[in-house]
Image 1 (spheres, rainbow, N blue to C red):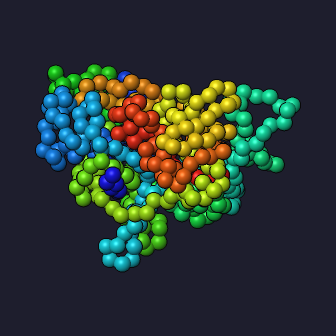
Image 2 (cartoon, rainbow, N blue to C red):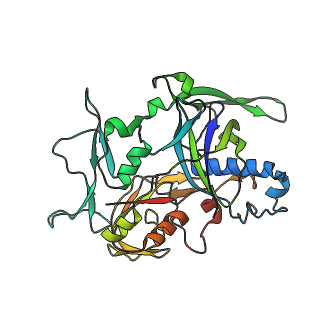
Image 3 (cartoon, rainbow, N blue to C red):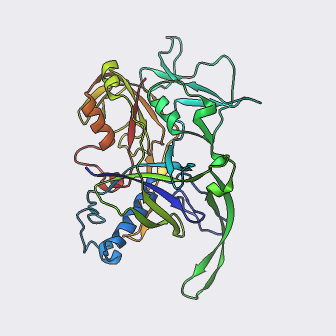
Length: 394
């Protein structure tokens, strides 16, 4: 299957409203960085429609079918398989540049702030509780952070590509080299919006609201020596051949962005080592929409006897680190209304799989297909980039 990678560079401030309803008088439109993968998938699909000279109105009504895009009801082969925050380094040699994906720390990685020093990184480890300790744990083991001192986790940090590669290998992460602060990547401004009355062609009465505008960093902003970097998004797609360059309408108000095809190396785990160790961690790289709530697709069983079986990979779920559920919705342009709100396991959720039965090929297949059954439960959400995963050493 043809895989392409793209760097999406905003040309303006973005309104990434996180699929949250707002617009009532006095409401506040909070932005989400990075946005849901469906934001990028929709922008790329729309731009590809225009590039193919397909009438969007006829396509929305299902009167035109495309081999790559399909129809709104039956998506074609095109799918978003990865979507991350990224930065493009400008190197010294002329026009040479390098795109680096950035990753939010997974749920089993905790970063502590230290006054006057570098952050301190600790990992949650699966542990069996003492017989005298009882709790509502849903798995045989509990993800425990063993600390002799109390600490307050630090948020707003991102793993570099090198740090993510070490995380996948189960190696130590250097906070000085492998972490970057979100304050160095973007800043947020509050903008006032006014609702419009299309019938009267004037401002609507009582429709004053506030919204967050996101300004991603540009190299011209300085602060990184003489080289600098531009912040944008990394998107990986399959099933369609996109032009080398596309102009996108991204986020709320259709702000401009430029998508360019790039060549970059995405960190991967050592699949052969996972097969030898017969255990691994399964990490969500996109929100997971599962029939059983926080339990991923492929899990069977009840109580604490939970088995995983999907795309030729089998094992036993022994532990999980899952943060509070998110709600995913969005706007269906074809139908002209909001999509159903669905609860989702958040990006960065971690599942420990023991007694692993797999080959390197089946592990690669699982990572490529994501946590979707065959046939796919929700083809539209699959094409939008949900339920995507990577694997890591324990």
